[in-house]
Length: 359
Ligand code: NAD
Ligand code: DAU
Image 1: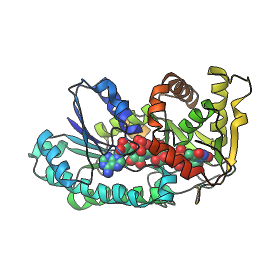
Image 2: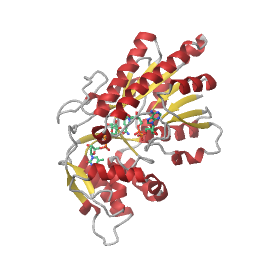
Image 3: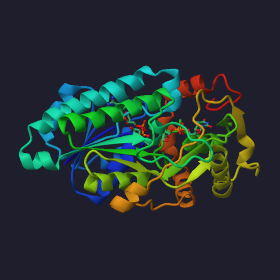
Image 4: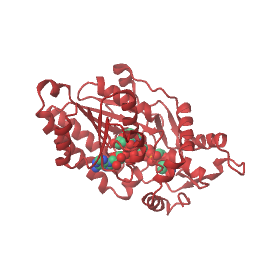
């Protein structure tokens, strides 16, 4: 079996659902169930004995050690993190606590368990750390894409905390021999994405007749990868990645934010036209920029492709259409994640801008 952390969040839950659709290998899913953790996403696994959801913190060494000893996983896949850049700007403390201190405690629990394994299991064991392209900082317009040897130059409290966790993972390999793998992926999108992030926020706000808040000039560039392609990359790295290595994961889909928002609007015009027949793009509103906003990310994923034969299955066009359709088909999931806590956050984030998003 494997231990997955943060498996009730966006990517972790997609990973668990896909894993159990492909394998029979059981999953212990350790998740603190913060505002971003949503057990409803895993509802289809409720009666599935291959999946056990445990509410708890990766930083709780007693709990993690007990889970490891009890279930004897052959691998740990670490998704657990505070993940939203804007939240890290408003309150970095939780990011330091979970992403840095939590990862440190998790590494120590795992190291204690791994050291006691019999030789064959010790050799086969893997700790896969899921990280982000944001650790590399911001690119200029014509800079080449990030490779695994690009400088680590994080600019937000979130990316700095993720970079710190990547460094800890690296050090635990070099110093203690812990068999680690790290993946640094670009922006994901797809089903079960919490509507505080760009794409799902635009979909739900558009449908609710609210403003579509574009930060600054909307010309910031991100590379976008369909979440199930990220999950397949993680499975492949877990299966065949070289110990201690970093693998960049990306979709070769660099897009400006405004283009993303306009694409979402055009798909909604087609799939769920407004009652007044006006285009959804009329709802676009420019709001105050994110402080320290990174201008451009781009991922060079050739190492993963050449060494391990991984390629994304979706194009941006096919993935974004599936995503918009998924949100149209799952209004209940969206309604349930829009809890009181979610509304408080949206109010705080957008109160000073020109937008009425989330109100
Ligand atoms: P998310 O915020 O949707 O989910 C994070 C999950 O971790 C939640 O279920 C939350 O309850 C859980 N969690 C938070 N703190 C915890 C703790 N202390 N102990 C246990 N569980 C805890 O995030 P996501 O978008 O699914 O991202 C997952 C991972 O992938 C993160 O490490 C993130 O940095 C990384 N990543 C995300 C993206 C992206 O585009 N979303 C891209 C690259 C890498
Ligand atoms: O690059 C990988 C990263 O992608 C992950 O590590 C993070 O966990 C994930 O949240 C994501 O970070 P971003 O900051 O790029 O994602 P977000 O969806 O918050 O924003 C995408 C872009 O859209 C960014 O340039 C900011 C902009 N934006 C975002 C929101 C929420 C807007 O213009 N308006 C908005 O309301």
